[in-house]
Length: 458
Image 1: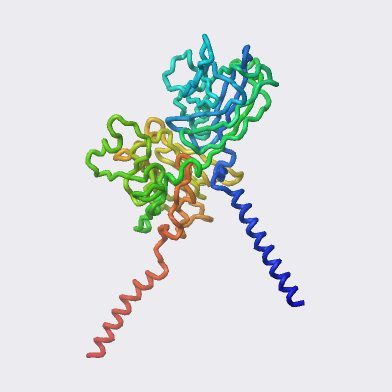
Image 2 (image 1 turned 180 degrees about the vertical axis):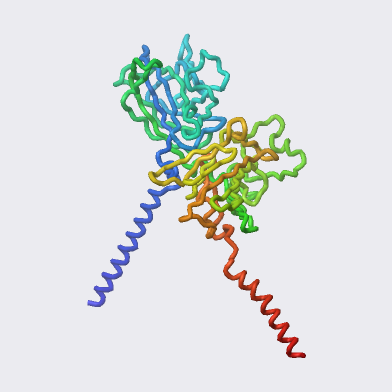
């Protein structure tokens, strides 16, 4: 019986090992690095809506609208690029508010030449200043789309497209496939086009409702892991009660002379002679990040300084520094998570909006610059920083300076999660429990020993 029982034990052990291995592989496959879920903006996405508004002899006219439903992630210059693959042999006859970047081979057409004959067109927004007869509503912003919380009126972009060699009824039209969105680089993953109920439009006087002939939606979600190989920002900390300045973690966004950073991994010293020629070589336009040489090698650093302590309030100074010599951040924003944001009393020189991704939890704030004052973060240099101060009211039940409570839980810059220092490196309160005892006992003991010595020699 002993051999059989040991055999059973071995079999059970093997099965258990295989089960654990299988569960591990399943977890790895389900929790991939391209997961696009954002805990601070769980419903954030870009929705692309195609509304067919007119049938033509060989196709249709549609209005394509992009809605940025992301609370704090926007699309900055040089703007979005939308691509897809036609299901059949469609062509683009004309466009308003946007243009295809490559016409393709239209040699088989005589007379009227299509705007684009490519099977996989790529479309970009037109620039500001485009003639009015080439514009439609919400177009021509150079592909820049603001975030929903920051400026919902400018979180939309549209263009009109006339498609030929396509279906001319709801049953014969085929939706495009393999939709891609670059904003301006990678990071977004788009799902398949889904036919939905036709969009309804209300007239300006709100007395008439019309509807599209056909509508389909595409949903695109963002993943920081797809957007870049390494982080793009880091956080440093300091406080009035501790002389220690906690710097960004070393190599937070890559290391000097390393190819792991986005781009070449090279950096430039601000004291380099002829710095301007190094940043922008003559006759060459280069958007590759070129950062100032630092221990962290991040393009952006956010510094959180616990500045002052009052009886009923406490004060923080926040400074955002740009270390990228080739990037100006327009319409920048920052998201901070801290439990005392439910009692934010005053903010100076920044705009503020409370974000409540979960009901009953008010610990997340979105901050951005004041228009025409500090909404533009210049490239690295003397002007490459913006700063503000925040005044919080204390909640006696939760407020403390102990154990790093005064520092943020997480910080995002332009929608990307910043690298935080390890918690054990945070500036801690001085250990007041033993220092006063030592400082009081030491002189007393010294005096006592001195007197004892004198009496002993009298």
